[in-house]
Image (spheres, rainbow, N blue to C red):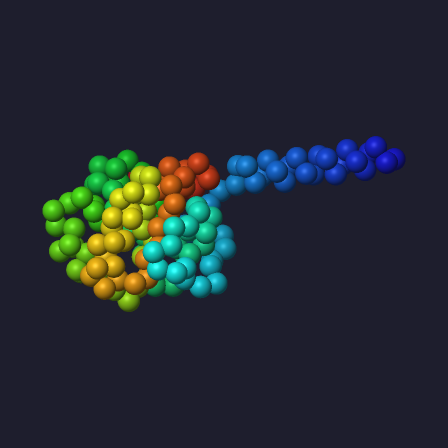
Length: 144
């Protein structure tokens, strides 16, 4: 009887661990953060997903239009940080909103957050590791 109980516990632990290893993150479902993260914070995919669901939060993809078209987070807005009109387009954004910023690997999102902060934006956070980390965590990517 004891072996059966040990085997059952081991099987349950395996399922739980397997579920964690292949867990998914979502920008549209799942838990929502209790509060916005501190400005300039880099978040793990799961924390980013939770914070992105906060009211008045815009998902901001700062990669090129071609990268965006190839796959982006659901509901994201594209604003290429390397575009010559980045500052002009950023000036049309509401500085009172939260911005969940991401790129391919996390480098361009830092550049974008710095530029936005210089323009008076204070509610900025980014996805550590970019969309690559998001996909590795099982995050949904869409092409429409």
